Image 1 (cartoon, rainbow, N blue to C red):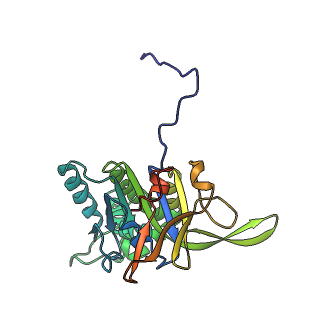
Image 2 (tube, helix red, strand yellow; image 1 turned 90 degrees about the vertical axis):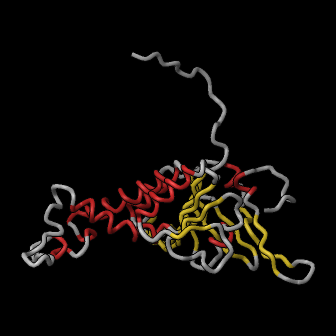
Image 3 (cartoon, one colour; image 1 turned 30 degrees about the vertical axis):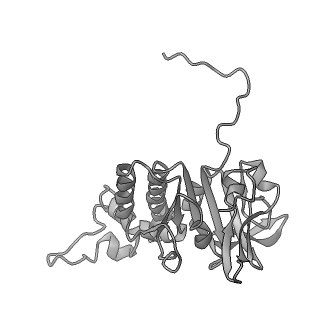
Length: 270
């Protein structure tokens, strides 16, 4: 039996900034544009959202592309500090074909792609009966997709010190003391959402106010945000803003140091 040295006193925190962060907002608020200004951040573009901006991005068309990217990052000796998944919703959709392939390779799904004598999908096949694994009984398909989704996140977390998951927002109906109310929440299927959030160090809702974008990391009944780092919850974080240069042209300034280098002089804008 290995000897274990149990702690006898509190130790100092070893994770001082978020390793896994989720940011979500309504469409077209500027999530991808703001991310494009984060140094050493590779944006994995699952929905072609970066094509209209200058960005260090790579298109992901199918789940196997993620394995190719991970291999290339390893070969390049891990040049990135951040990897961003843009977006979680698009990743979920992309996970479905792989979930079906895995299910068809399992004993339960052996007849999923059952073919007839002409090589066509047999009418008694699982695919013909249900159409998609998402229609399997007892929500089994959601678990299958969540497994693929989690595998992707796990692989990417090994490729850089920090992972950012970008998501769209939706409204969730909650009940408190018999009264229904709406809360802004992350747009993800329940199982994928749980797998993404339970290891997240910070979850922030991005909103626009004039020419400025803020991130709200404060947990409340109105917004499904929160985190492990108190400095993020003290106030809504100004993360980006458009300012006019000397010629009157708008320039996007970002303040990622407020999240990843708290206490750093804000005059050093990124």
